[in-house]
Image (cartoon, rainbow, N blue to C red; front, top):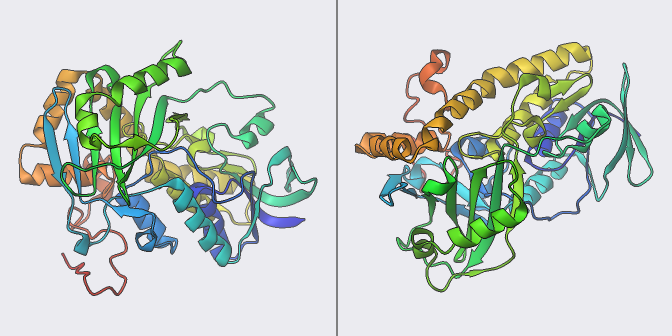
Amino acid sequence: MQTDLLVVGAGPAGLACARTAHDRGLAVEVIDKAVFPRDKTCGDGLTTQALRLLERLGVDVTNQPGYQAITETVIFSPRGRSITLPLPEQSQGAYSGVMARVDLDFALLQRTRDSGVLVHEGVGLESLSVGTQSVTAGLSDGSNIVAKYLVAADGHWSSVRRLQLGRKQKDLGSWHAVRQYFCNVESPTNKPAQWIFFEPDILPGYAWVFSLPDGRANVGFTVLRREHQHGKDLRALWEDLVNRLPLRSVLGENAEPEENHRAWPIPASYHPSRCAQGRVLYVGDAAGVVDPLTGEGIAQALETGILAGEAIQTNQSPEQVSSRYQHTVERVIGRDLRFAKRFQRLLHSPARAEAGLRIAAGTAWTRRNFARWMFEDYPRAMAITPDRWRRGMFSEPGAFCARPIADKNCLG
C-alpha cells in the first residue's frame, strides 16, 4: 500500500495530524495497535486551549455524554488554605472540562474516520525503513505501507523512535503520575469542579480530584521522578495521599474506587531536535511536549498534531518540512514550555508556593486571570512574549461559543 502520510498512533496528536493533513488534500492512513474504544491513563483534564483546538477540528465534546464542564477550581495550599478560582460563565463558552480518554479518543477517532481518513485498529508497527524518497513501515498484520512521510504519535515509549534509533530509550520521563477512578463522589460544593492539592511532600507536584458525570471523579497525583523510586513507592504514597483529610473531604465518605490505580510517565523533555528526523515527525508525548508545570499534555498533543499536518507538503524536501515544523513548534509552544519549567521552580519550596498562591488569591482580578492562565486561556509565557500581545486577550470567549445555542452570549 502507498500513501502520502502514515500516522502511527490514534490518540489526540495522531488524529489531529491525520485530520489536518487530510483536509489539506493528502492521502492519509492511521494505525494503532489498540482497538477502540480503549482506556488511556491520563488526568483527563481539558484546558481552554485544548477545547479550542477540538473546536477547530470539528469535535464538539461538550455535547458528548462523557463530558463534564468545570465551573471553578479549588486549590489547597501547602498549609491547607483553600482558594477558589472562578471560571467565566458557561454562557461565555467552554473554558475547562473533564472527559475520560476512553470517551475523548473514541469521539476523535469517529470524527476523523467520518472525514475520510483510513484508520486501521489493532495494527501495530513492527519494522521501519526510512529512505531518501519514502518511509516503509512493516505492520503487525504482515502488510507494508510505503509513505512519503510518517508521523510518530505513539507516546513516550515511541516504537517509531526506537526503530529509528535502533535501540530502546533510557528516558523514564520527567514525572510520575498515578490515576484512579472513583464513584459515589459527593462534591462539598455541589458544583462540578477541579480540586488541586499542593501537599508539601510532593511539591512541585500535586494531587487532584477532577469531577466527571454521574458522581464519578478522576483522582490522582503527579510527582517529579527521583532516582531509585519504584512502583511500590508510588503505591504507598498514593495510599497515603488518598486518605489524607483534604482529599478525602472532597471525595466524601461514600466514595469508592472503581479500579486499581494506574501509573504512567510524563515526558516533559521538549527540545526542537526531538521533533523531526528526516521524513519522520514526532508529535505529542513522542515529542516530549507535555507542560512541565502542570503535566497537562492534551492541548500540546493536539497543537503539535495540527502543526505537523500543516507542515507536510509532498512537493517539498524533508529538510524543508522538518525545519518548518521545528520552527513552528518552537514559536507556538516551545517558549511556553521553557517558561513553565522555570516557573515550576517556585513550587519546589512550600513557602514560595504558599506565597505565590497568596498573590494569586489577592483580588477578584488576580483569581479570575490566574485561573484562565492556569487553564491555558492564553499562553504560559504571554507576559514575556510581547509579539503575542493583542487587544482583548484577557477577555476572549471560550471554545464552542459560535454554535447557535440559545443560552450562548459570547459577546463578553
